[in-house]
Length: 371
Ligand code: ADP
Ligand code: MG
Image (cartoon, rainbow, N blue to C red; front, side, top):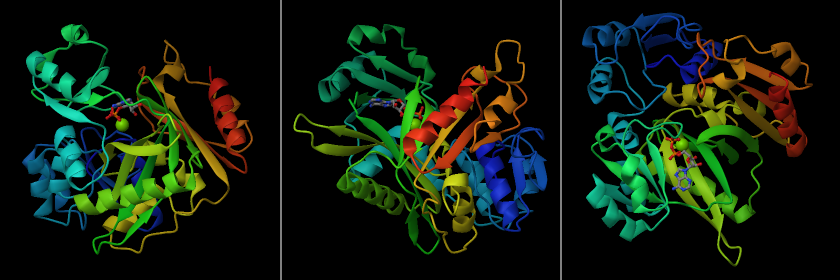
């Protein structure tokens, strides 16, 4: 596993359950994934000697975030099959390339235009209109590197030196955001998880709920879009497809892809308790050449609430976990991060049950009790 964060940690736990020994390659032996893995190789992602020390121990290599240098993956590949491929990563690392490939495959994406500076922004406005969201093409996550522009004047505070390429996207007035996790094996078989509904706060995922409130036709459309995206990009492993669902004046719903991520995803964390096979186990199965598992829900409904560093309070004091765990049916996951920072993902709460309203209320209540 290249990367030591929480996604790598939950992957390592799932892999261990299937009898695998996981070697984590990351920057520090105390990172979340390194804490639970069999072995850890510490090094910089572009340190070829460290990559070799890591890769020679592996039968198959995967990763937990897409911003991995191309030469790192190229090096890994010389020692063991590496999924997702460098082509998939190159696409997922670059919003412009990602949107262009999806659009070329006939998939629906929000209207967008390439921007490099203030002058080309004016041309982009002519294509996508205002308001728009200006995003760096590379390295953005949790809303970082994004600006909402109501007018061209709003671009005055954009620091153009942050990135040499940007994408301007039409602001989508969506009814809801959903995501579909799809797994794809080396031989091309695919399996989707149920559609998840996601609420974001400050551009960061806050709550995931299942089942999503959607008409049956839109649900089928979302599942089909995700499968086509995985096939188009030739992904092996998991692909998360984030989508906007909006309706026109006549109430006709449509689906647009926001972005994709070729790895486990925050919106899939509830699968650990909510589905017969978790997203992490599914990723293990896909990259290790095992049959894909059953993704059905074990119950009617489930919800997940993220725990950001904000819950810790200014002095860094640990929240009242016992209070949250006293809410019947609520499960706690902590990622073992040393320092709580505002906006940093530190853990999550999950609840599975019969009614969506009830499980959402429970994870919210458990989280409120922490303060
Ligand atoms: P990140 O890589 O930071 O997750 P996203 O493109 O997914 O970037 O943006 C984060 C969130 O910002 C989205 O989940 C959505 O809530 C909001 N957002 C992003 N793009 C748009 C858009 N074009 N229209 C409306 N909301 C958007
Ligand atoms: Mg996103």
